[in-house]
Image (cartoon, rainbow, N blue to C red):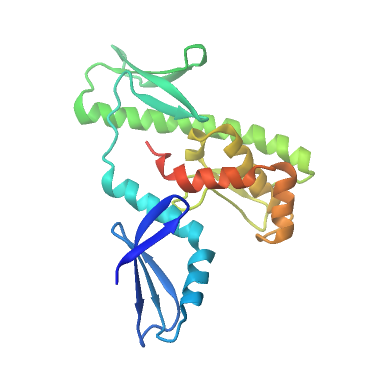
Length: 242
């Protein structure tokens, strides 16, 4: 029977299925509901424990599906707001006779100015804004992440190998056994303490390539509010799109 699943403040349509053909518990997430399939002899307690173990993943992917399923592409016009380090910047789109498209951050006015050829109109104009906006975000993300990586690696006494900017679909960051760190550029829209948490999280993996109690103890040493920032990403990370 369809019911509901409550994860934090989010209520999700939920369906549970047991079948003799099912060999292990699994979760499928669709835009309509979350479905858990399990072997016939699986107890309610086992299913609940499995859901609790995977609740962060469930919530993150449910919210992402809701975002892509119901939200159309944004329309970028002068007066719209765009996020940067948790701040709402005013967007100002200016026509220019030149062929070049550029973005300039007016920090004093909390404004992002985008200049583009005046002949670009309609969807072509919107696509041009999205492209320059993504380019600007990536430039800012690279600079901010490098500054934070260098600062926190010194504070934590660790050394990373290479840093790469990524757009991972389901992850905000990763750290390889070779000491290479990947960080998602879209997080540049989040509040700055969230970025500090992401950097500290990945640098901690240089010491612990797992999520053991020792790992989280190390994260908490440098980021006491890490649980708050993790929750922010779970609940609002799906909105960090252009």
